[in-house]
Amino acid sequence: MIIIYTGNGKGKTSAALGTMLRTAGYLKKTCIIQFIKDGSQYGEHHAVKHFLKDFVDMYQEGIGFYKLPGDRHDESDHRQAAAEALELAEKKMRSGHYELLILDEILTALMVRLISEDQILALIHSLPADLHLILTGRGATQALIDAADLVTEMQEIKHPFQRNEKAVEGIDY
Image (cartoon, rainbow, N blue to C red; front, side):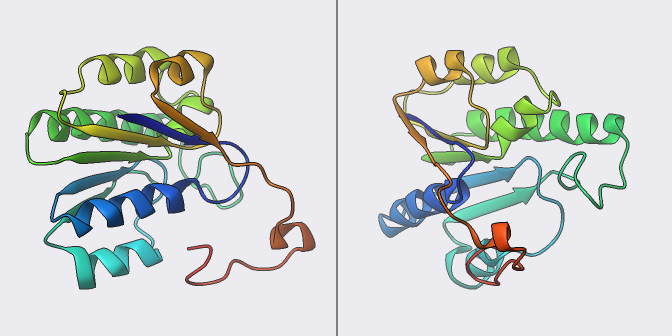
């Protein structure tokens, strides 16, 4: 299956991680490649390290959110990181070691033009028949939606950030 979790609401990565947990429950392997997130530690990294290391390989290939406050990198650095993440995704996809491949925030990388729709479509079209693929991030294009088997759009209705409340450890990261 090709699954897309998109939209402006919270929960895209969390939905993908829920599927990863189900996959691990059947003793099957998942590879997660994060396209935007940098080397900061998120709750999912701690969980994988402490509980799921035999079933999940996780790679942070991003250098941080592009063009957001605190971004200290040039556009070329972000493009290079996204290209390297895509190359790693292709390598892991062909490895035969995984039942599930999650490309976290790849759609965000597309939305901010760090990678192209054609690159993602090429990846989808070369997907081995026995590998499931999850793409997350804002801004899924119609062509990607058409190529997917399952698409869920997360819609933000209310969020504590609207009240300038800080992110909560274990909930937001």
